[in-house]
Length: 242
Image 1 (spheres, rainbow, N blue to C red):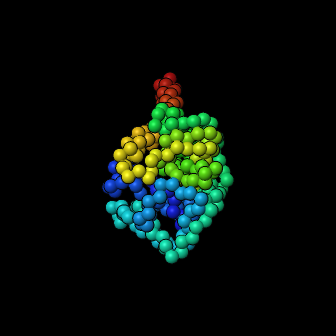
Image 2: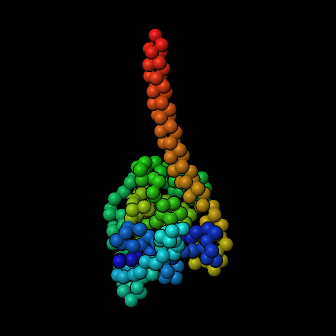
């Protein structure tokens, strides 16, 4: 099981005091999980930690006792550093969904507009399975830095939207401005996180609206089909009376 220590995720209202969750990307599954390795890394620079082995542990089970949520414990004795560019190539497979241009402040309505543009770039079948925006990775090639949208204030220049594993997105950008991650006080970071939470809410709204539209179309088709059948039945009954 090949594992990468990827940028930490900040989740509002989580039980952890800092709201921050360490994350691991599992190479074979092309998915990320919460890490049992208590290392918080909002930004990765130059090289990324790779673990050749690790253990997948059950965090939560359903009512029947089946695993529902996992965490991953890397074997730290197998740790090596690999170039960040190699990780990016592996998780994106050099694929892209499209490009967007401009300077975007995620704490304003520009953030909502970005979410809508990215949503429209994706295939209809892909949208419902994509992770929420706050989890998306942000890669700045000219600085060799990797972070997440949840730590980002501004995106600037060309924004290339790429896949990240099977259900995530990676935004490759010209430049980005981040929260004061090394600040002693988390007050400003938490405030900005709550503002950026709108991006997740808007993504959910877009996906739900599309699914409701599809459902309405199915009902309309069913109603039309039923109406046609009723008309045929009426014709047959009229014929019998005659």
